[in-house]
Length: 233
Ligand SMILES: [Zn+2]
Image (tube, rainbow, N blue to C red):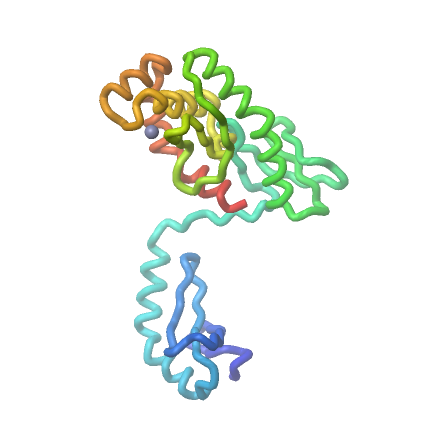
C-alpha cells in the first residue's frame, strides 16, 4: 500500500487526501458513506496506517449508524429518474439530437449534453414563460400592487416580499402543482398588507385563496424533497 492506493482497513480501502492547510489526521465520512483519511503533508505512511486501524472500531460504528438512516436520494440526471414538473413526476428518457421536452409522462433529454445542465436550462425557460403570467393573474384577481416580480434561487423558501413592495419567487416553484404555486403567490401578495404571519395575515390569505390551509399542509409534507432535488441542478 502507498499514499496513492490508500489504506486497507478490513475489507475497505480508504483513500488518503493530503491538504497543506491541515494540522492533524482525520477520518471523514460523507453523508453517502464514503470514507477518506484527511492528512497534512509529509505524514509517514506507517503513521497514517496506524491512525486508521486505531479508529477502525469507531469507523465501523459510524458506518453502521449511517446504514440505518434513510439515505437522501442523489439525483444525477440519469435515465429513469423522476423529475418534478407542475406537480407531476416526469421520468427521464434519452434521445439523440433532441431538445428537452415532456412527452406523455416522460421527459426527453438529449444524450449529447450534460443532463443536469440541460434540465436546469429547460426548467428556467419554462419558469420564465409561466410564472410571471401566473403572478399577473393573481395580481389582477386580488388587486394588490406589487412593484416588481423577481425570480430567484432559494434553498429553503418559496418566496418573499420586501418592504419596497417587490416580490421574489423561487424558480423551483415549477416543480409544484399549480394550485400550490397559486397559494405561494397569494401568500407573498398578502405580505404587501401584513409584513408578518399574524392572524389577520392568515385571514387575508384565506380570503383571497380559500385553500390556504390545504396548500400549507401540502408544502409541509412534500415541499422539501422537491426543493432539494431542484437545488441540486
Ligand atoms: Zn410569509
